[in-house]
Length: 518
Image 1 (tube, rainbow, N blue to C red):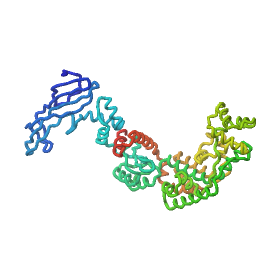
Image 2: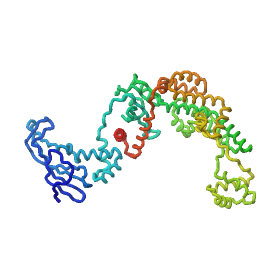
Image 3: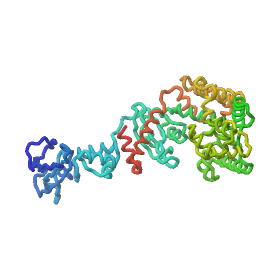
Image 4: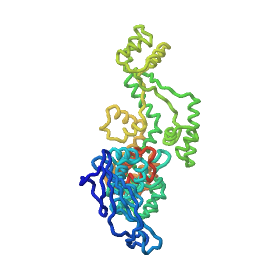
């Protein structure tokens, strides 16, 4: 039905509304252009010679939860200076050439897509009376240009996993403004080098200890100061100490067993060992892995060639030699109920089914097989095993050796002290790592050279050699306030955006959305 003087969207200049038609879901606006002349797109000169008219349709922002459609009569003009040239006039303030939606609607749908992505953005647009398909939302995102940022001075560079273990990208952040300024394909040195060469304003580069990024900074911005990230330095030091812990497995087991003997006064510490054939097979694979590592192969390639897991290869490379594998029986859910089942066994109840039923009444949540295996061992005359000697992981031991002792429990502190007594070289390496951490916190680079000279004579020699190759960046990490912490936060945001887009997050689309958030 025609209506007059509605509270409707603003009318662009140069349009005269002829009719308004409103129904329950939509508003149709019929209009025509009113300009006396139009400019030729080729020569730019104005013309008043009308050739013909035609209708254009634009979808606009909704009004009162109703979709708004403009139907505009547009004229074609003859150009007086371009022979045979016929051009159509523009619709001012409504839509671009060949567009089917208004500029303001396209901007609103693009903003929704930037935040939510394709299909989620399309669902919200439909709910807001701006129907659009998910593919169109993605096209709108790709079509929008990026806003140029101010020339950066301090940047942080880090990698992020596109497909973990297969393909990666590089993120570049402005550390002064706390925002992402670019995403680069891959994590090799060439894209980063070219980007730095195109941004000569960069004077400080914060990075991890990756060789390609160091090379890119050295060639792309030779005058810039490189700063090694302190968190990565501490992680590298911890990993170096963990490799030393791996080489002290006999001492670790002795300390564990001695502690168990002191608590239980029982010489029977049940521990299973693989057969000699299994140990020999593992020894051969370990020696092969060490040889391949010496040839420069990656951990992933070594694991593929010898048919071992990457974690096993990493353990062998950290230890630097073969370590016999022995597995202690782990804790059982039955341990807490052993006094009860031992009492019932002595009373003559040897049925695993009955024992399991009674244990369930006592609050036991384990399976029947646990009780059946225990009863089978008792029938064979095996003595009741004491609680298993649980050997801590190398990561946990490394943490105990490097953290503040006052934060540890009494048992953990006793274990760390006993291990330091049993392995003096491990104790010295742990003290050196703690001293290195203190050095990074003191903002005094004068202590770096004495520390490097002292630690080079210990088992940390490999870690020290790596620091010497990057000594200038390490020294800058002690005195400079910049780090890759903000970059890691931006990587988390990038991963959230990437996962929200499922399989549609191609690089150009992801780059648009990440830079829009920034």
